[in-house]
Length: 182
Image (cartoon, rainbow, N blue to C red; front, side, top):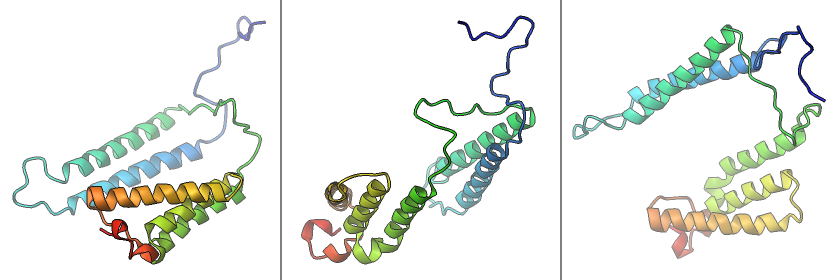
């Protein structure tokens, strides 16, 4: 059997739904423009040393800001012209099921815990909590396996940043361990 339209029936336009307002797409585009404008404004405040060449530290932020504004404006223009994004067609996505807000809340809580605890506990322990919390939120069992993996990964990141790159990450409770301090 063919899925072609009946003779004389116009083919559906790809990327243009029959009805509905594209509020999500418009919000995304406006967000891109706002982020681009913010980036451009903040880039203008970067202090350029007198010894900087023609391409100073402002060049990359200006390029990113301009691309964000241009991309957001292009999406808004496409929306005004009637173009809409296609619905998700992923084989593993069931669009009839709503968002699992409990899982989203757990993930956000894990990230907020990292932000709050990175100074008092240090990067290795706070990142371990983030990794463990995210894995637990997404259904990892048993809980201790992601905790061990998260601890190993965060310690590798700590040592790599402090010893090889010379970038300080707070060691927190593990402050006395020699290889973890910058």
